[in-house]
Image (cartoon, rainbow, N blue to C red; front, top):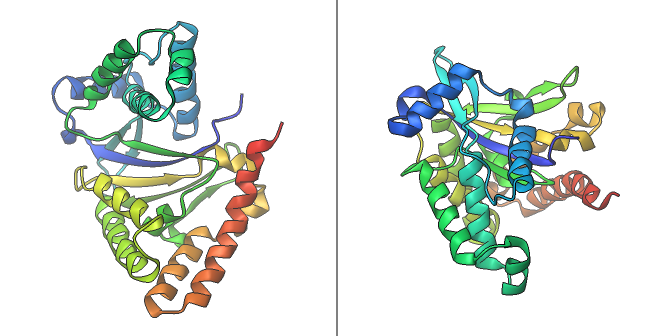
Length: 271
């Protein structure tokens, strides 16, 4: 089964950021062995499928982690937070979908489902989920966090595209991009995404690292497309053009990005 067609924005924190029962679970997961980043999407999916086959709305509370190393050699950990993320999705479903659909999907009293989801979501305490996902595309505002030249491209063996950036740098870039976008094109859409991203990043330890990962979307991009992909550079060029008041250049960058990622998203209808 292919990896889920999701892109990822992840935060890896130092071990000192994890305390209490949640910290013990993270350390236990680290001792068991981390999950490879290329396998993270499949691990999420499999945990949720096992829950569904067992007639549970939410996956079990087993903690899985990804690991990376900081520039100073310290171990940084990204819990997948599969259960609380699934709980957040369930609560959004309960809030947004009509009663008939909710009843058909839940198979149990809505009050029970809501209670279980709230309990699971509370497992991350005062913190935030360490993983944000997007289906069938990479949200263009995410590229404002990274530098094209820092991209890590793997096309042999497990194909992967990702960036890692210190959280302070990512946060500063998000805040700068938000100001430029609000001034250039208004408060909706990308500006809102940038504000939400900055607010999310601000909740983590200052020694953390942020990772942008194409995840399963690489399945729809051949090796040449991956090699020549300049999405991060185009977003930076668009931001500079907006700052300079050059709407034509910004629009041209956007159209190139729209065509590239629109072709990826078009695979949604395959089969």
